[in-house]
Length: 318
Image (cartoon, rainbow, N blue to C red; front, side):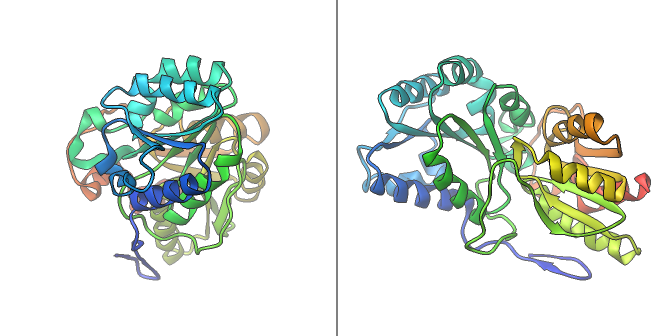
């Protein structure tokens, strides 16, 4: 539980990996064409717990991520609906050519979950700490890119993309997220969510940085600054209309992401605003650094991903 002067932010009771496994089980039991693929991380994402219930729809491909992506493309061509999971850096950086050519170029239908996003990889360290995955998948023509902020969103999007053809990438953490949404909330591609309104500055965030941004809003309010907070979970396509609306309204924009400041949310927002509404802007994210071993709270401090960092950036813009 994290507490600010004005609000308490509680962790969810269900881990994100449990939500993934539960939803995959539900989808597979309803649709025999749903096939889940793993790269020897079934325990890490909790699909090991559902193996006995869907033995013919869950395949452990071993530590061969590029081969797994090729298998997913092949399954798609036979009419199957493959859901591919591995850590984010292996789903994108390691298997990028297969994802790009066998997947997107061949117009196949692959749903990808990249887990352990950014600093949430913790003790897996620098080689497993992906700060570049959103940038890589954004480069793929027609790919849909999400970063989820809690389990309600993850469960909804996993079900939603079953019916949608193409390359879908969902970036997530594995453990408990701060609860942002209530059950029943809906989420659409190309649409952000305004979680808090404000007239002075706009904070646009995704993933674990949504909760940090809400806390930053509390810190700013204590100083008489009203900050709007937007969950821009749909990185591609991005909500251009909402971005321009709030840029015009506040004339100051801060982006916050658990990712490199190059290529991810901050870049996507800057691209829109530079063309449609030039605005004072600051990007909070990882700057020219690799990952390292550490707990999330420590790593947030090291990479300047805290609520205070976001609030300070907003004040500097103003």
